[in-house]
Length: 218
Image (cartoon, rainbow, N blue to C red; front, side):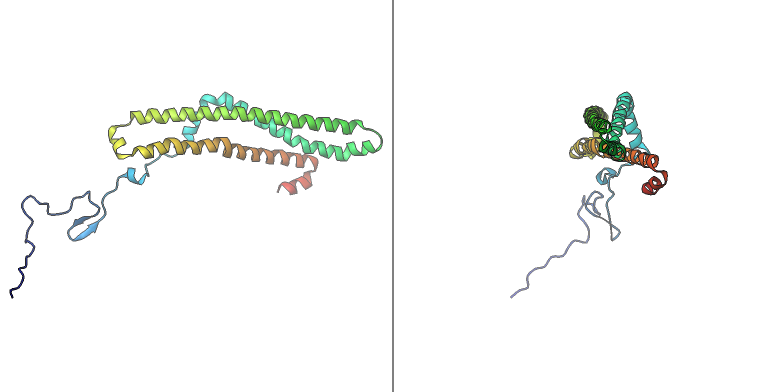
């Protein structure tokens, strides 16, 4: 019985074969150590953003609509004032109108009831007008932003579109814009409403009773 022939690896690579792994492989091998390949910033999606860029963008979007923004703000101020007038009318009814009603003076209580109904109707009308005005401002802002994104994408180089995938670009122009819509239509409105409610309630408490109102506000 004869032993099976064995083969050994050649001492050197054949002519034309590379001596080391290319740089664009999963791992580059050089001088016996493993090195991570260089990553494109587009792959990490951590492109640099100038400080204050977001605030500047929002200002540029809202400045052309500043008159309508002012009207929307005034509507919200009046609506909150009408809402907060209700507790004042209830306080007046308890302190003055009900005692007068016990003495057969029905006028103050009737006046309070009519005023409360008017405040409720005014608050509802102002709320409806505010929703319509704010929705139009939001949609105009988003339309302007989508147009800017589209025009900017058209002006970018072919190299950018080869490195930054179309799916991520579409996500930027849909998901991020939708997040901005939620901020403008829900988050910002809720924040302003809470701040105005706090200011109005604090002012009423301090006007009714400075000492006790200061403790309540604190």
